[in-house]
Image (cartoon, rainbow, N blue to C red; front, side, top):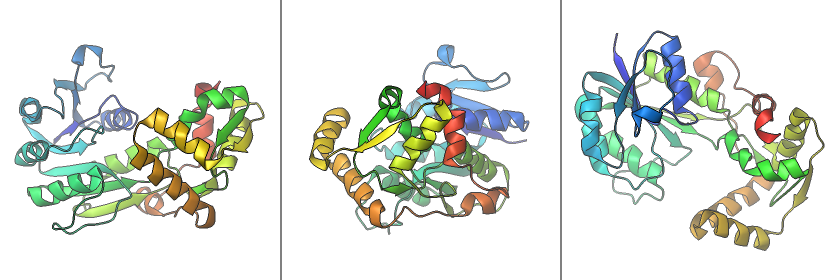
Length: 277
């Protein structure tokens, strides 16, 4: 039995990875910043560590064969990947739907930087490239409760993925053979518009919720104020604009890997209905 280290073990996806591995009888060690505050399943070994401090990872990696790695928006520190690669045979990295880059191309986002570092590290690797999470629609909670969601590009069609499907694919890559060097782009089973997502959430919650298109200039000001990163806001607005005419792609990766369809957005809304009430 090999030991698997899970980073981000109390997060949206990481907590599901931990519980699935434990349920399958795997030997799991969870990397957390504050062990005393971590609510983890019985039987999980807890290690104190922080991806912003590579030196704290040394003891957490003792005896570890595989690592589930997620990067919590911190600046990229190559030393983290170096430390992991020295100890672990296999790294499953939760990435995004990014373009493959050669080693001499400048990376545009940190996921590409991290993928490149992992590729060059000497460890075996699998990249789970997830389309935007369905959980991002929780940003509409207050508006859903008020009955109207005001957001730009209501006809932008997205293929958002349920966090449980992300975790299931990661666990599959960690516990079965044949995934070294794979780049898995995973999506939901359908591409549905922002406005339709709001309608489905309303049905799950049991109330009518209307969509109102927010003017792009107004949205830009509000999002920059909320997110604090004008370049990121501009990239999001441009992507949503593009998805109006060209819906976000849908892959069959979840079906191929797990032998079942990816969970629908409706099932996600039903699972999270209480969060919107």
